[in-house]
Image (cartoon, rainbow, N blue to C red; front, side, top):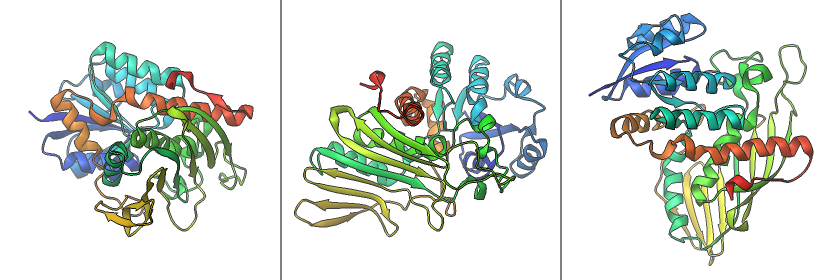
Length: 348
């Protein structure tokens, strides 16, 4: 039976990925849309079919809506997700899960109490090279992992959001709460744990606004760069860099260094996954190229959500599995604010 999906938030990520990917899935029916700016919801309804709701409660009261996709500003993720779960709807929520750890935990607890599915759109887990690299690491292809470096940087959300320009909500502390750490840093923090099968147990970080300004020319209210040193379970170390100031070319690379070799993941645009042995031998492994803001391909998120709705198993994007990465993100914020290394005992 097809699943009826409601879209809450019709911004760029919904328009470019969630809505068209759901429309292309034979197991989904796009029942309707809500957006604070009604015109965008009307545009999506005209293009893909479905109704427009006056508000969120109206959508959640519709028995034809089995599940919802939430792609609103960061600050309201928790509130709307909990509202939807309590209304008996399964939920796919955009990252970051929420803007406080207490809210993240409340979302997971509500989903489990209501016996509903809650997935977080951590799409880096679904990229082919990341899946293959995870298997290689688990199989010992580079021996015991010692260190890593992972990076995600581009020119900033003002070039990507639904309303391009310096007044984007991503730059507002009131709406976003966090900057690049929540936008890009959460992706790579979650990814490194996924790849290694180990959690971040401590972090030292610097978060800063180096270049971005708002419409008035003043520095934006959130960070545009984040540099983190992560200590993982087992003691291995690595760095995570997130930036909105990579002008000219996007970087979404990860390099894993082990006792018997190296894996280079999306480090070379022509070679998505490379294995380099300790003896210097190299092998290019088959994998798709990474998505970029300028080169959108199917993310796999909608398909994973539909599989979860049908099988009643949350799969790889289960919200509880994202909690360790959110703890690390908040620990990085605290480290930068307090100028010291922050332990994360809950992740040990």
